[in-house]
Image 1 (cartoon, rainbow, N blue to C red):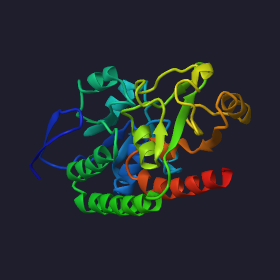
Image 2: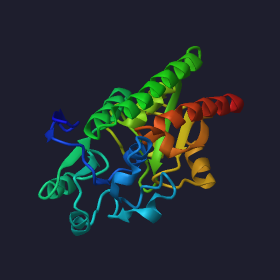
Image 3: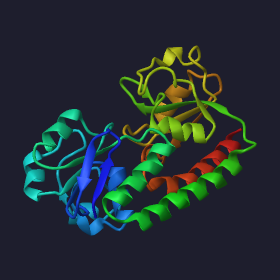
Amino acid sequence: MNLILSDQFQAEHRFSSAPVRIVSLVPSQTELLCDLGLESRLAGITKFCVRPFHLRAQKTVVGGTKKVKLDLIRDLKPDIVIANREENTLEIVEALKEFTRVWVTDVRNIADNLRMIEDLGEVFNVRTEALKISDKIKWGLERFENFMHERPARKTAYFIWKNPYMVAGGDTYIDAMLQLNKFDNIYRDKGRYPEIRLGRIRLEGDPEVVILSSEPFPFSDEDAFEIGRYTHHGKTVFADGEMFSWHGSRLLKALPYFEQLQLRLDRLQ
């Protein structure tokens, strides 16, 4: 094995062999690594790496995504750390580079996601497994796009936080999933994760659908009522945030979930 590859942060990496000891700082990418058959190579994960369910009981937890225990990671002697431009800070990445290789992903759309899967297949010499996942995703996308073909677009706001209220804007993986569902994000032009005022929601697009994500904030029925009353008959639904925000192999599960979500919205009309 003699590879020269660039990660999605445009850093060049030379590999003479596939990395054996991995630390993953991204929950969705931890899930992907396991689906690629690399669970045994995982030396460390974050406290938010909850898929597969058993993983945290078997692997060393190195902190969260925004605050990691550098000394603990150093002690694990990883061959590579998998990080993400959005999930992890530049300070964390730079600190890790002082003693180990850091592969940084940047996934904002489906094309980025497919490239990441194929890249990791190259890095870890599991190309066949990566190709199987990407092929399944492409087949699932074709099926879902056929399902969505004659469905109308719906003006939508996707809430991720309260106090202050924050929503998913454009140039995000969440927005890519919204577009896939023909959810016309009314905040697409307001930045990536803008703060908003509920009193202006009608003026800023008056969504037909309000989506309350299950993560990172646990919205309640009271929150749904509060937000919904500022719209003009908008339908408010709770959604599994992992399906909209987790990239990697999670998209395989997200596509049938999106189909059921669309049918649920049909019943609300």
